[in-house]
Length: 284
Image 1 (cartoon, rainbow, N blue to C red):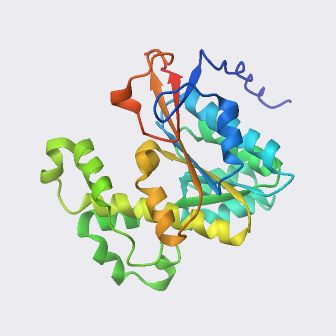
Image 2: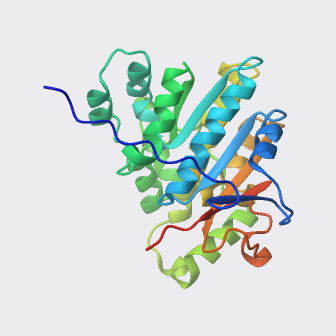
C-alpha cells in the first residue's frame, strides 16, 4: 500500500502582488536587491509574524537564493528561533541521517506550524548539507528569568548553563526597553516578575548562537529566522550579536503583512529594517 500523497506545491509567489519590497525609508526595492545585499554581510536577520504564511515562503526563498548565490564562496547556515538550544543534538542527529523525521519531530519540540512553515527551510538545509542552528534559550529557563529575574539563573547547574548564553547576559538597551514598554502598553507596570528579563534572554541566546556559528564556520553567511520584535529596528538580537561579536555585519529584513502591500505607511513601517517586505495579508 502506498503512503499518503505528498502535499501539492503552492504556486510561486508573485513579487508586486503577494509581496512588495521596500528600503527602510519606503523607497522601492526588490527581492533581488535583498539577495545582492546579503553578499556583503555576515548575518541576515529575517523578522516574521509567526502566523503569516507568505512571509514564511519569502523566508524560504531568501534561504534558497542565498545558497544559490553564496555557496561557491562561503557556507550558508540556517539559524532558527523555533528550536531551543537543548535540542541541538537532535537537530544534528536528524541532519546526519541518524534518526527518522518522526523521531526528530517527537524529540525536538517543533512549533505547531512547523509542517507548513518551517519544515521546507529545514529540509532544504538538510538536502544541501547546510548547518541548522537551534538558537533559542529553553523555554523553562526563559520562564524562570521572567518570573524571578535574570539573577535567578545563577543558581542553575553546569548542564543547564550549556544551553544558555554566558551569564550575566546583556540587559535591554534603552531603545529596546522603550519598544517593550510600547508593546506591552499599560500592562507593563502590572506584570508579575520581570518579563523583560525573559525577553532579553531569548535575544541573548539567539545572538550568542549566531556569533558561535560564525566563529565555527569562518566566512559563513548565517540566515536567522525570528519573530519581528526580536530584530526590528536593530534592537534585541542584533544588539546581542554586537555584544558577543563586535563588528559583525548584519542585514535586517522585516516582513509585515498588509492589506495593500503596494501602499507604504511610513508611520508604521519606516526603519523597521534595511529592507521591509510587505506581504499580502491572509484573508480572515
